[in-house]
Image (cartoon, rainbow, N blue to C red; front, side):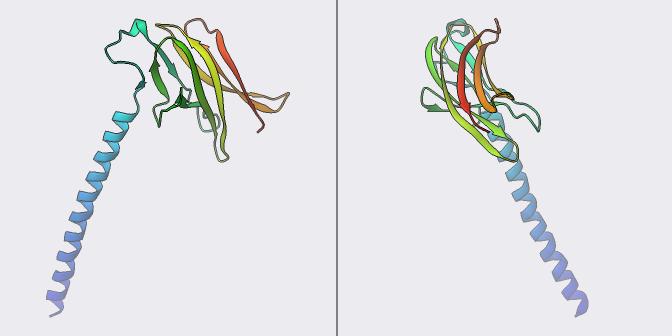
Length: 155
């Protein structure tokens, strides 16, 4: 009787592990597929448009202390987790936040800039030690020229 009870427990435990294993494999696959599909730049322009006829903008990421500027929206179009987008040349409004580790977000701040075809732009956050506030900038990656600056926010 004791032997049959132990065998029954072991069979039940193995079935439970098999169900857990299937769940774990499914969870890992869903996570990998969502990351691979969501990490690339969002295309806010036609995919048929040649690269030299569109612009690219991306946020910045840092380490555990300095997380960088994150793109939230461009011209009202939410970006979710991409932190980058292809856009048409012309005037754009970019909504940015800065993620302070252990302390939440700073912003949002909206900056406007004029994008040029074939150019790459980088959104950055800055902290003014002398004035004690955060602010954002957008720079042309080819020329290092600041094309927009603003969004002063107290810490």
